Length: 277
Image (cartoon, rainbow, N blue to C red; front, side):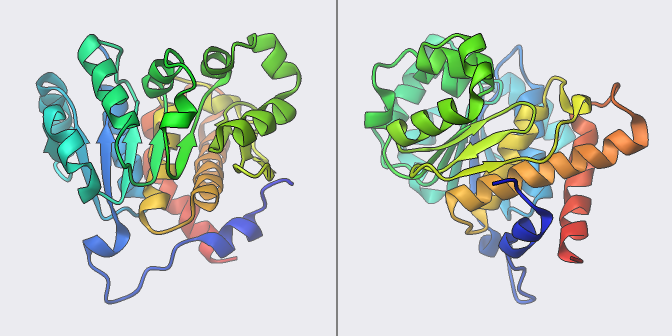
């Protein structure tokens, strides 16, 4: 089924007048490395822009310095404290710009054996999982994985050509096998529930084919999860809002020249447009 604005509008989280920041959830973002300091910034801002109440970033010191200067609203957690404090958060996002250092790989593997809250795994989080045999058996609970075709190839052993030639069936097969919500990113992004229910994004926008937009999407999904939506619904809503923000940009700027950071301020505008339906 193709995602519609009416379907998404009905799933948007409520915003009670007597709310406080805890009402809208606490997200822990485990992301960033020396060579990729921008990815955690994009993901954290996206969490906030879709309505999350509090976002904490677990990252190395060099990244902390950069992000804190650009985003004073984020709080920080030393990576070595993550495993012990993981259950203080409503949602975890693992992977944007994380890198694959020995220390990072160990952290992700330790988290595999933890009792995780609802979790979104993106980017290098997926690349690390691809090197762990039958990772889906260790990774319990409510999990959303968000691969593009290259990451999907590493996770499945299929070629990119095989994946792209049959995107819906491939995504459906592995979502059911892994028992995870699966987002196969790309033209008309495919979203599949663990039971095999399929939703297709209506958006095919080359303006979003640029570095960092996947980090924004991962943050949008995590931010929706934090507000209490079920994983499949949060994922579909995040994908749609991200795509709608991209459409607004495409009409304003064109098919080229869009930056991932351009999408961020348009996420709340996309939500507002849906609320007037």
